[in-house]
Length: 151
Image (cartoon, rainbow, N blue to C red; front, side, top):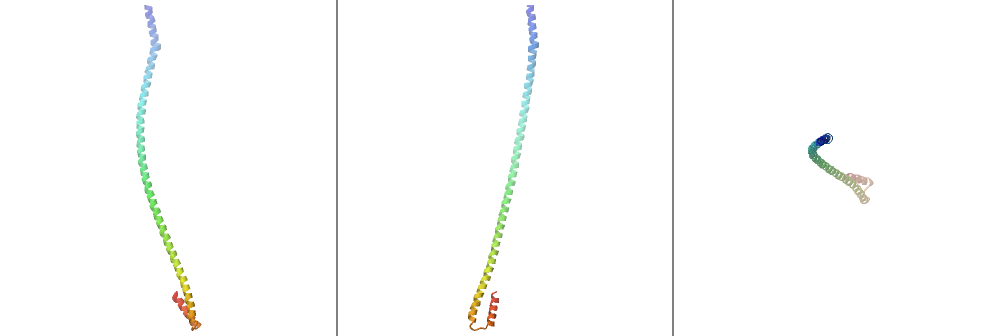
């Protein structure tokens, strides 16, 4: 029985030093790693929440900036539209004014041409009428006087 007890003590001592002690040490290290992993996961979750909050804030800020830019672009577009309308209006007015001047010039030219033709017709008519009883001097005097009056 004593030999059994010594054998049992030796087996327990061998198991204690070679199996149980390394096993408990390994279990403690594993527990530490698990706790460290859990702490890291909590920190990562906290950091993720913080980053999500920052991302949401940046998105809100970007939307606000985009709204400002869009409003400015709309204002600029309105200004450009107004400027284009004003420019077109001025161009149309200039075209109308040019057409009026051209019409007035053509009117003057037509009047001048008509006066010339009427003058010639009067001269011919007077020549026919006056050829019967006036001298050439009187004829020329009347023609010059009539032309002066027509102009």
